[in-house]
Every structure is written in structure tokens, then in C-alpha cells.
Image 1 (cartoon, rainbow, N blue to C red):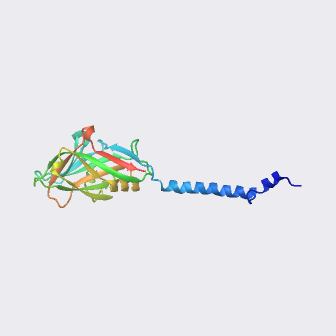
Image 2: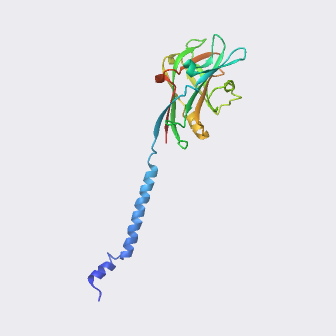
Image 3: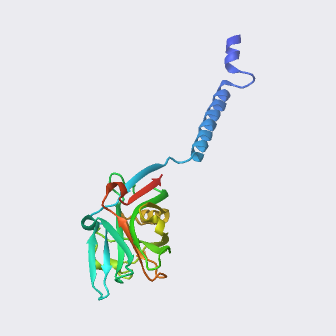
Amino acid sequence: MISRNQIRMKRYNGVSLAGSIVIYAVLVLAVFALSGCRSNNDPLRTYDTEIVSDMDADGDIGLALDDTYAVSTAIDTGSVLAGIDPVTGEEFRGFLNFPLREVDGIPRNALIESATLEVFIAGMSDSQSGQFLPFLIDLVDFQPPYLVAGDFSRAIQPPLLTMLINFYPSDVGHLVVIDVTELVDEAQYQGLPDLQLRFLLDFSADSGLIEIDDADFATAPLLKVTYY
């Protein structure tokens, strides 16, 4: 004869014990699935880093009117020149180098959310006072990271990507913040070990020269990147 306790074990509100276990398992799996969907919609964690330019690799290349080149490094001069001197007609193209894979750098597989470049404009020369100066910033790749005369040429050292930036007389004596997200993103996509930037006067301008301070750590060129 079957006891009442045995009946309770066989049936629970009309559902067998085995059926109850199956329903419970399905509910648990559903909860985990919903939790997974919810975590996928959560914003990715981002990281911030700051990279100071490498003075040993920073510098400029000057092209004189007699077609001779002069390569200077920031560690010797304390600054980087870019543009065309309105007095002498000599053209300078400036270079900044930011190591991307060192301790304060960016992981190779990171995705770039935003990036800014801070430069301190120590001086500006322009034949038309009060006018802004249009500049090009080229993303380039020269390895190892030291300058040679050929880096002046956009044919010999072609840009991987270029952006336009205007400098104003009011920038002198101040930090200028430049959005370089696209350049850093491209460098990351290309897997470059360094972010190497070449500054040159836009071809629409006749002359104009800027001097970027690269001597004082407090005002040295600084790259700020947010990535995930």
C-alpha cells in the first residue's frame, strides 16, 4: 500500500519531481542568459594614459634656399620648428615621436576612443601679422626613430594619414590642445611602435613659422589617450 508521503514525493501540485527539476534548471539557465545579455550592453571599461614625447627622436629638418638640409634634434635645441621663415625663406618641418608600446603606452590590441596632443607654442613668425597659420600634420613611420634628411620629403617619407590644424597669434605662450584621435587610431591599426608626427606649413600659405617648446618637462609635447 502506498503511503501519503510517497504520494507527496511523486507529485507536487500535479507536477512530478523530475519535471520540477527540469523546470528549475531551465529557469536557472534563463537567468544566466539574461545576465549575459545585460553585461554585453554594459559600457566597456576605458583606460587613460599620458605619453611624453621622446626628445631624442623629436626635432626638425631645415631646407635652405641652396637645397641643403640641416637636421636638428630637440635634445640639442630644446624646441621644434615648423613652417617657412618669412625672413630667410628657409623651410622647416618638425617631428614629434611618442612611444606607444612602453610602460605608459597602449596595448597592441587596444581600441582608441579619443586622443589629444598638447603642444606649447613658444613663438610664431608671420609676414602678415594677426593671421592664422594653416599647418598639416602627417602621420609618418620612420624606424629606427631618428631623423634623416629624407624624412623632410613627402615623396620619400609619404604620410600614412594627414590632418589640418590652424595656429593663431594668440596661441603663443600657451598650450594648444589638438584632437588627434584619427591619427592615433590609424597608428594603432597599422601596428606602429611609435606615433610619429610631421608638422609642415600648408601649401596654401606663403610663409609662417612656429616654435614648439620641447625643453621643459611641464610644457613638453604630451599625448593623452583614452582606450578600451
